[in-house]
Amino acid sequence: MTSFGFFCIPMFMSISGLMMFISKRKHMLSTLLSLEFIMLSIFWIMSVSLVKMSGDIFFILFFLTLSVCEGALGLGLLVLIVRSHGNDCFNNFSILQC
Image (cartoon, rainbow, N blue to C red; front, side, top):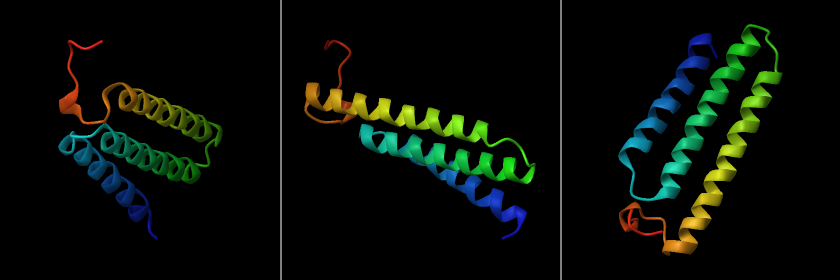
């Protein structure tokens, strides 16, 4: 695969994940999945670019650790919302509820 292919595919992935994040805002689970898809495409771009520049892999592992923590935090919030509201639909949320 050429160098253009290594950067074209993850860029398409991040743009499609961003479009999914913007368009499908009905359920919290779908927004969390699109955010994780964007993070994986950014991880792919960073890993390819650092390998091509023969950079340090430590930064990639740090980014991967932060994205895993972000996913765990999102899933924890999703469980909390499902327990308190009954489902993950955004239209059921109200600012007046505690």
